[in-house]
Length: 274
Image 1 (tube, rainbow, N blue to C red):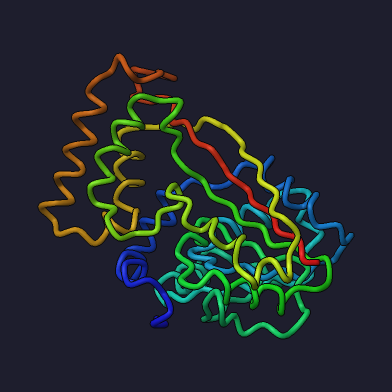
Image 2 (tube, rainbow, N blue to C red):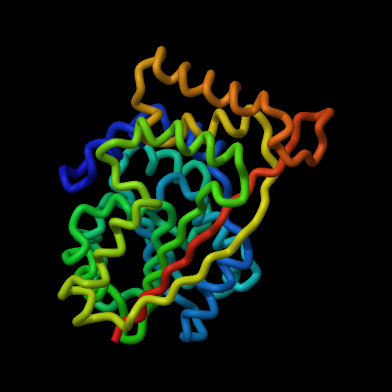
């Protein structure tokens, strides 16, 4: 994997972690995917670059969405992790889609090819915001769009999520997590300001079904937890169990089956090339 990729991402999303990631992470709500389609003013068929494409969770959701099913000419996925690329090729079989190695500032895509660059659950790992903005502008057509999208557990709507997030944070030291907002420094870089209009941001709230196993698997798919030694990872699992034993703070969907509400938000940030 490229040295331009954060070392924790290299380890946390390396070989052996990707099947769990693909199984555990939630997909993306149709309303957020439709929002991105409305932002791309070209009628289609569209050329799309997906950076940090991972195991293909967002790619599959995009291709299955009725607004996008017939709107895609070609989608070129770019992913630095060989393990994730391997999982991607197992789960995304649409002939319009290809995947290659690359990074935020070295995509390997030709000038002016893309109508849309989309980055799902990954841009917070970007090591150089200015170089990335310059690269995105090079790859995009005039008026093209960059769409950043993230799913995140919503600690503001749930006491148990807030308790878990507080415990997770002890393991996050040195990682550029989305919630920290470090990625927002992009918008003050010369590369961004010279090439893009001011960003537009939208937040979507939703609720998924949660179970004890779902919560454990999603925790263990986080990069900074995936790299922990077994005893420390078990401590994280024990913490989850201790929080979920407080049944009065859970909003139950079916208590007999152990299914409760798992609140999430999806944040979409759009950049439009000048």
